[in-house]
Image (tube, rainbow, N blue to C red; front, side, top):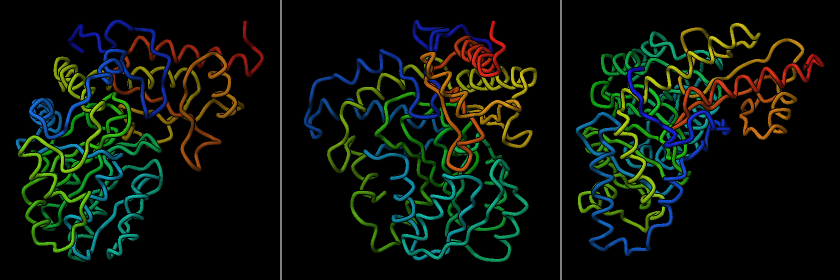
Length: 374
């Protein structure tokens, strides 16, 4: 990585927070939350929000629109479906807990939904996606770029190419733990809706969803008669042109986002991705010599969250308890993986030196659990 940028803003090597989201947040961002109250129809607010709307597309690598909603990223999932899909069918590609939930959401909305399932820890296979698209015409395809539940990343560039070559379906992609942590190319890949949340690699407090939307998706929304109100992408787009939100926004979080986007762009999107990949490489090298195994298949290790199986004889939950006792904020396995896995959330503004210190803490904790501590 060819940059001396301090992502931690003065706390290099000192970060002790490795939850896979919400993540560690810099003190400068927390201070920004205390900005003055404004009317969200005032010029001062429009100046603030205008700055955010100018910067967000750079993160998504799009020349199109990017906006915020005062929800978790789950709200933006729903915005895409309720705004753009009339009845379906939807192809929901599932390879972990969060992609499963997006598929469940489609079904709960009453949309005709076909689920293409992959084993947890497996990346999405584009050939299997192609087979589905060739067999049936879909209105939309939903897929998760980086499955936080399993630490598994899929090749969205190839999946997107497959979708576009074999259908005219809208491509909706969850980039919750990939945006600001690895390469995301909304325009180049042809993503119609890219959805993320503030509390992951953007390194902000939770409470705001961010998304980029294509003209194709907005045209689909125009053809849908009933889009609801709060999550209507056309309403959000119209107010965005006025540098406003349709409803009362989370003003403190927007103050923080304004500050954090400057920080991200100062580091550089490519440099930020390189730092995350260096953190992954650090964990991979360490795991190989310390008996930890990656849960996801080779070639699909996430650059933002590592899901690991501890060495034989070391209980994952006991390991996390030992680390917590030493004042580290840890990440447990998700859902059915909780008893067997740990997760390390090396994303956001965390630096490589801090990750190395955390890994050394694992070595000490393992030795203590085995009764071999010196």
